[in-house]
Length: 132
Image (tube, rainbow, N blue to C red):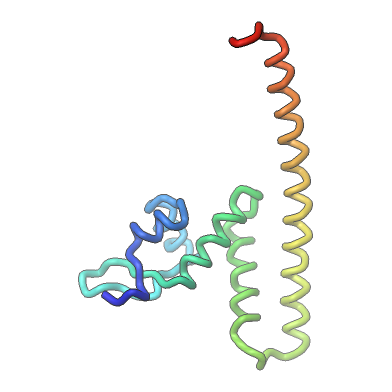
């Protein structure tokens, strides 16, 4: 096997995703292994790992699998080349901007939730005797 392909175990270690999760993303069409070994093992490239990392980063922000699929399709199309009609490029870029805006809103919401959780932890800490 060449150095450009990785088996699923290495990909799982690099992405901190479980084998089961990676297989699930394959079943849902989010990430398809770039190749298979002669023995039928899934083989992934750096591009596949990058795609999994996008998915991993979207998940805690509450994006659905369909939303992940939509964003990946848009970025795939934008990355495909300069032969896109201007109207399609503009539509895809607008959609990516919407995802960025939604991401920023969700991050702000998470920061608020985290601040509230920290306040709660601090409240509990104040109720305990020192060192306990």
